[in-house]
Length: 299
Image 1 (cartoon, rainbow, N blue to C red):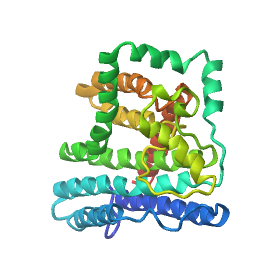
Image 2: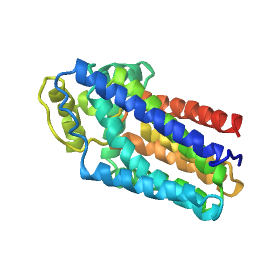
Image 3: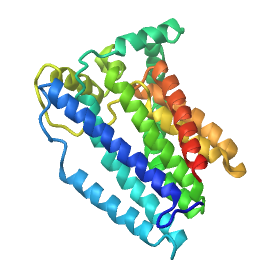
Image 4: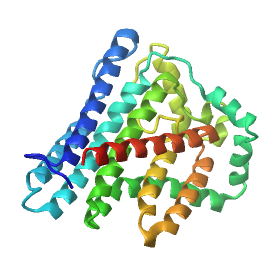
Protein backbone atom coordinates (compact mmCIF):
# COMPACT_ATOMS: atom_id res chain seq x y z
CA UNK A 1 0.00 0.00 0.00
CA UNK A 2 1.50 3.27 -1.08
CA UNK A 3 1.23 6.38 1.04
CA UNK A 4 1.41 10.14 0.67
CA UNK A 5 2.53 12.42 3.49
CA UNK A 6 -0.70 12.22 5.51
CA UNK A 7 -2.96 9.71 3.81
CA UNK A 8 -2.71 6.56 1.73
CA UNK A 9 -2.99 6.95 -2.02
CA UNK A 10 -5.84 4.44 -1.96
CA UNK A 11 -7.80 6.68 0.41
CA UNK A 12 -7.11 9.72 -1.76
CA UNK A 13 -8.51 7.91 -4.82
CA UNK A 14 -11.49 6.66 -2.82
CA UNK A 15 -12.35 10.15 -1.58
CA UNK A 16 -11.88 11.54 -5.11
CA UNK A 17 -14.41 9.01 -6.42
CA UNK A 18 -16.85 9.90 -3.64
CA UNK A 19 -16.37 13.62 -4.31
CA UNK A 20 -16.90 13.17 -8.05
CA UNK A 21 -20.08 11.18 -7.35
CA UNK A 22 -21.47 14.02 -5.24
CA UNK A 23 -20.57 16.52 -7.98
CA UNK A 24 -22.45 14.35 -10.47
CA UNK A 25 -25.47 14.17 -8.16
CA UNK A 26 -25.42 17.92 -7.53
CA UNK A 27 -25.17 18.71 -11.25
CA UNK A 28 -28.10 16.40 -12.03
CA UNK A 29 -30.27 17.86 -9.27
CA UNK A 30 -29.57 21.43 -10.36
CA UNK A 31 -30.26 20.55 -14.00
CA UNK A 32 -33.48 18.79 -13.03
CA UNK A 33 -34.57 21.77 -10.95
CA UNK A 34 -34.09 24.04 -13.97
CA UNK A 35 -35.51 21.77 -16.68
CA UNK A 36 -38.12 19.73 -14.82
CA UNK A 37 -40.55 21.93 -12.94
CA UNK A 38 -42.20 18.98 -11.18
CA UNK A 39 -39.11 18.50 -9.03
CA UNK A 40 -39.83 19.52 -5.41
CA UNK A 41 -36.72 21.14 -3.94
CA UNK A 42 -34.70 19.08 -1.44
CA UNK A 43 -37.44 16.66 -0.35
CA UNK A 44 -34.93 13.79 -0.34
CA UNK A 45 -33.13 15.16 2.75
CA UNK A 46 -34.44 13.16 5.71
CA UNK A 47 -33.20 11.90 9.09
CA UNK A 48 -32.08 8.60 7.54
CA UNK A 49 -29.80 10.38 5.08
CA UNK A 50 -28.37 12.67 7.76
CA UNK A 51 -27.70 9.78 10.16
CA UNK A 52 -26.04 7.72 7.39
CA UNK A 53 -23.81 10.69 6.50
CA UNK A 54 -22.84 11.13 10.14
CA UNK A 55 -22.02 7.45 10.64
CA UNK A 56 -19.95 7.38 7.45
CA UNK A 57 -17.93 10.38 8.63
CA UNK A 58 -17.49 8.89 12.10
CA UNK A 59 -16.28 5.45 11.02
CA UNK A 60 -14.32 6.35 7.91
CA UNK A 61 -12.45 9.39 9.16
CA UNK A 62 -11.73 7.87 12.56
CA UNK A 63 -10.34 4.87 10.69
CA UNK A 64 -8.30 7.28 8.61
CA UNK A 65 -6.96 8.93 11.75
CA UNK A 66 -5.68 5.66 13.25
CA UNK A 67 -4.22 4.29 9.99
CA UNK A 68 -0.60 4.41 11.12
CA UNK A 69 -1.22 3.41 14.74
CA UNK A 70 -3.72 0.57 14.26
CA UNK A 71 -3.71 -0.36 10.54
CA UNK A 72 -5.79 -3.53 10.95
CA UNK A 73 -8.60 -1.84 12.90
CA UNK A 74 -8.33 1.16 10.61
CA UNK A 75 -9.36 -0.70 7.46
CA UNK A 76 -12.20 -2.45 9.33
CA UNK A 77 -13.59 0.88 10.52
CA UNK A 78 -13.26 2.36 7.04
CA UNK A 79 -15.06 -0.62 5.51
CA UNK A 80 -17.94 -0.13 7.97
CA UNK A 81 -18.00 3.53 6.92
CA UNK A 82 -18.38 2.34 3.32
CA UNK A 83 -21.63 0.59 4.25
CA UNK A 84 -23.09 3.84 5.57
CA UNK A 85 -21.80 5.64 2.48
CA UNK A 86 -23.82 3.21 0.34
CA UNK A 87 -26.97 3.98 2.35
CA UNK A 88 -26.25 7.67 1.86
CA UNK A 89 -25.47 7.56 -1.86
CA UNK A 90 -28.35 5.40 -3.08
CA UNK A 91 -31.23 7.74 -2.06
CA UNK A 92 -29.35 10.69 -3.58
CA UNK A 93 -28.60 8.88 -6.83
CA UNK A 94 -32.15 7.55 -7.01
CA UNK A 95 -33.63 11.03 -6.59
CA UNK A 96 -31.25 12.65 -9.07
CA UNK A 97 -31.92 9.98 -11.69
CA UNK A 98 -35.65 9.50 -11.08
CA UNK A 99 -36.38 13.19 -11.59
CA UNK A 100 -34.66 13.22 -14.99
CA UNK A 101 -36.24 15.58 -17.53
CA UNK A 102 -36.46 12.58 -19.89
CA UNK A 103 -40.09 11.52 -19.55
CA UNK A 104 -40.11 8.47 -21.86
CA UNK A 105 -39.64 5.00 -20.38
CA UNK A 106 -37.63 2.53 -22.48
CA UNK A 107 -39.07 -0.68 -21.02
CA UNK A 108 -40.97 -1.54 -24.20
CA UNK A 109 -37.81 -1.04 -26.25
CA UNK A 110 -35.72 -3.39 -24.09
CA UNK A 111 -38.52 -5.96 -24.09
CA UNK A 112 -38.36 -5.83 -27.89
CA UNK A 113 -34.57 -6.30 -27.76
CA UNK A 114 -35.10 -9.41 -25.62
CA UNK A 115 -37.60 -10.84 -28.07
CA UNK A 116 -35.23 -10.19 -30.96
CA UNK A 117 -32.68 -12.32 -29.08
CA UNK A 118 -35.28 -15.07 -28.73
CA UNK A 119 -35.88 -14.47 -25.03
CA UNK A 120 -39.47 -14.18 -23.83
CA UNK A 121 -39.73 -12.82 -20.31
CA UNK A 122 -43.33 -13.81 -19.67
CA UNK A 123 -42.63 -17.51 -20.27
CA UNK A 124 -39.93 -17.45 -17.58
CA UNK A 125 -42.30 -15.77 -15.12
CA UNK A 126 -45.02 -18.32 -15.88
CA UNK A 127 -42.63 -21.24 -15.41
CA UNK A 128 -41.45 -20.03 -12.01
CA UNK A 129 -45.02 -19.27 -11.01
CA UNK A 130 -45.85 -22.92 -11.74
CA UNK A 131 -42.99 -23.98 -9.43
CA UNK A 132 -43.61 -22.00 -6.22
CA UNK A 133 -40.78 -23.62 -4.21
CA UNK A 134 -38.15 -22.66 -6.79
CA UNK A 135 -39.73 -19.23 -7.04
CA UNK A 136 -39.43 -18.72 -3.26
CA UNK A 137 -35.81 -19.91 -3.22
CA UNK A 138 -34.92 -17.57 -6.10
CA UNK A 139 -36.47 -14.57 -4.36
CA UNK A 140 -34.56 -15.34 -1.15
CA UNK A 141 -31.28 -15.61 -3.08
CA UNK A 142 -32.05 -12.30 -4.80
CA UNK A 143 -32.85 -10.41 -1.59
CA UNK A 144 -30.23 -12.00 0.67
CA UNK A 145 -27.46 -11.20 -1.79
CA UNK A 146 -27.94 -7.47 -1.19
CA UNK A 147 -27.00 -7.85 2.47
CA UNK A 148 -24.05 -10.15 1.68
CA UNK A 149 -22.65 -7.78 -0.95
CA UNK A 150 -23.12 -4.79 1.34
CA UNK A 151 -21.10 -6.49 4.10
CA UNK A 152 -18.44 -7.84 1.73
CA UNK A 153 -15.93 -4.98 2.25
CA UNK A 154 -16.03 -5.64 6.01
CA UNK A 155 -15.43 -9.36 5.42
CA UNK A 156 -12.45 -8.53 3.19
CA UNK A 157 -11.11 -6.13 5.82
CA UNK A 158 -11.37 -8.72 8.59
CA UNK A 159 -9.55 -11.18 6.29
CA UNK A 160 -6.76 -8.59 5.91
CA UNK A 161 -7.39 -8.10 2.18
CA UNK A 162 -6.90 -4.35 2.25
CA UNK A 163 -6.19 -3.88 -1.45
CA UNK A 164 -9.33 -5.83 -2.35
CA UNK A 165 -11.43 -3.59 -0.06
CA UNK A 166 -10.43 -0.48 -2.01
CA UNK A 167 -10.72 -2.14 -5.42
CA UNK A 168 -14.12 -3.66 -4.62
CA UNK A 169 -15.66 -0.49 -3.27
CA UNK A 170 -14.00 1.67 -5.92
CA UNK A 171 -15.56 -0.60 -8.54
CA UNK A 172 -18.92 -0.27 -6.79
CA UNK A 173 -18.87 3.54 -6.82
CA UNK A 174 -17.91 3.56 -10.51
CA UNK A 175 -20.68 1.02 -11.20
CA UNK A 176 -23.19 3.36 -9.53
CA UNK A 177 -22.01 6.40 -11.49
CA UNK A 178 -22.13 4.60 -14.84
CA UNK A 179 -25.47 2.87 -14.18
CA UNK A 180 -27.32 5.94 -12.94
CA UNK A 181 -25.92 8.05 -15.78
CA UNK A 182 -27.28 5.53 -18.29
CA UNK A 183 -30.62 5.51 -16.47
CA UNK A 184 -30.74 9.32 -16.50
CA UNK A 185 -30.83 9.39 -20.31
CA UNK A 186 -32.65 6.07 -20.86
CA UNK A 187 -35.00 5.64 -17.87
CA UNK A 188 -36.60 2.27 -17.22
CA UNK A 189 -38.64 0.79 -14.38
CA UNK A 190 -39.30 -2.94 -14.76
CA UNK A 191 -41.18 -5.44 -16.94
CA UNK A 192 -44.28 -4.40 -14.95
CA UNK A 193 -44.47 -1.48 -17.37
CA UNK A 194 -45.03 -3.94 -20.22
CA UNK A 195 -46.76 -7.08 -18.94
CA UNK A 196 -49.99 -7.81 -16.98
CA UNK A 197 -49.75 -6.56 -13.41
CA UNK A 198 -50.82 -9.78 -11.67
CA UNK A 199 -47.31 -11.16 -12.24
CA UNK A 200 -45.67 -8.37 -10.25
CA UNK A 201 -45.44 -6.96 -6.75
CA UNK A 202 -47.17 -3.79 -5.61
CA UNK A 203 -43.79 -2.03 -5.40
CA UNK A 204 -43.01 -2.77 -9.05
CA UNK A 205 -46.41 -1.55 -10.20
CA UNK A 206 -46.22 1.58 -8.03
CA UNK A 207 -42.75 2.42 -9.37
CA UNK A 208 -44.11 2.61 -12.91
CA UNK A 209 -47.02 4.77 -11.74
CA UNK A 210 -44.72 7.02 -9.71
CA UNK A 211 -42.54 7.71 -12.72
CA UNK A 212 -45.58 8.63 -14.81
CA UNK A 213 -47.02 10.83 -12.06
CA UNK A 214 -43.70 12.58 -11.45
CA UNK A 215 -43.37 13.38 -15.13
CA UNK A 216 -46.93 14.66 -15.33
CA UNK A 217 -46.28 17.29 -12.68
CA UNK A 218 -47.74 15.38 -9.74
CA UNK A 219 -45.04 15.44 -7.04
CA UNK A 220 -45.10 12.74 -4.41
CA UNK A 221 -43.03 11.59 -1.45
CA UNK A 222 -41.74 8.04 -1.11
CA UNK A 223 -38.58 6.12 -0.27
CA UNK A 224 -36.81 5.69 -3.61
CA UNK A 225 -34.99 2.39 -3.77
CA UNK A 226 -34.13 0.02 -6.62
CA UNK A 227 -35.38 2.22 -9.43
CA UNK A 228 -33.01 1.12 -12.20
CA UNK A 229 -34.09 -1.48 -14.74
CA UNK A 230 -31.37 -0.94 -17.35
CA UNK A 231 -28.60 -1.71 -16.57
CA UNK A 232 -29.29 -4.17 -13.76
CA UNK A 233 -27.45 -3.04 -10.64
CA UNK A 234 -28.18 -6.42 -9.09
CA UNK A 235 -26.37 -8.23 -11.90
CA UNK A 236 -23.54 -5.69 -11.82
CA UNK A 237 -23.08 -5.98 -8.07
CA UNK A 238 -23.11 -9.79 -8.38
CA UNK A 239 -20.27 -9.60 -10.90
CA UNK A 240 -18.22 -7.37 -8.57
CA UNK A 241 -18.80 -9.71 -5.64
CA UNK A 242 -17.94 -12.85 -7.63
CA UNK A 243 -14.90 -11.29 -9.30
CA UNK A 244 -13.20 -10.42 -6.03
CA UNK A 245 -14.26 -13.71 -4.43
CA UNK A 246 -12.88 -15.60 -7.45
CA UNK A 247 -9.35 -14.39 -6.71
CA UNK A 248 -9.05 -16.74 -3.73
CA UNK A 249 -8.50 -20.39 -4.59
CA UNK A 250 -10.65 -21.74 -1.77
CA UNK A 251 -13.69 -19.65 -2.85
CA UNK A 252 -13.22 -19.78 -6.63
CA UNK A 253 -15.86 -22.36 -7.51
CA UNK A 254 -18.28 -20.94 -4.98
CA UNK A 255 -17.92 -17.53 -6.68
CA UNK A 256 -18.78 -18.98 -10.09
CA UNK A 257 -21.76 -21.01 -8.84
CA UNK A 258 -23.11 -18.18 -6.71
CA UNK A 259 -22.94 -15.75 -9.65
CA UNK A 260 -24.92 -18.20 -11.79
CA UNK A 261 -27.53 -18.66 -9.05
CA UNK A 262 -27.91 -14.91 -8.56
CA UNK A 263 -28.31 -14.25 -12.30
CA UNK A 264 -30.96 -16.98 -12.56
CA UNK A 265 -32.69 -15.68 -9.42
CA UNK A 266 -33.13 -12.25 -11.01
CA UNK A 267 -35.71 -13.48 -13.54
CA UNK A 268 -38.58 -14.68 -11.30
CA UNK A 269 -38.44 -11.48 -9.24
CA UNK A 270 -39.77 -9.60 -12.25
CA UNK A 271 -37.37 -6.68 -11.95
CA UNK A 272 -35.29 -7.09 -15.11
CA UNK A 273 -35.26 -8.04 -18.76
CA UNK A 274 -32.41 -10.16 -20.14
CA UNK A 275 -30.93 -7.06 -21.80
CA UNK A 276 -30.85 -5.36 -18.38
CA UNK A 277 -28.81 -8.23 -16.96
CA UNK A 278 -26.38 -8.39 -19.88
CA UNK A 279 -25.79 -4.64 -19.69
CA UNK A 280 -25.33 -4.86 -15.90
CA UNK A 281 -22.60 -7.47 -16.37
CA UNK A 282 -20.86 -5.35 -19.02
CA UNK A 283 -20.98 -2.15 -16.96
CA UNK A 284 -19.59 -4.04 -13.94
CA UNK A 285 -16.64 -5.32 -15.96
CA UNK A 286 -15.90 -1.78 -17.13
CA UNK A 287 -16.15 -0.54 -13.52
CA UNK A 288 -13.72 -3.21 -12.32
CA UNK A 289 -11.24 -2.31 -15.05
CA UNK A 290 -11.38 1.41 -14.25
CA UNK A 291 -11.06 0.84 -10.50
CA UNK A 292 -8.07 -1.46 -10.81
CA UNK A 293 -6.38 0.90 -13.26
CA UNK A 294 -6.89 3.93 -11.01
CA UNK A 295 -5.62 2.19 -7.88
CA UNK A 296 -2.70 0.31 -9.40
CA UNK A 297 -1.52 3.11 -11.66
CA UNK A 298 -1.16 5.49 -8.72
CA UNK A 299 0.03 3.00 -6.09
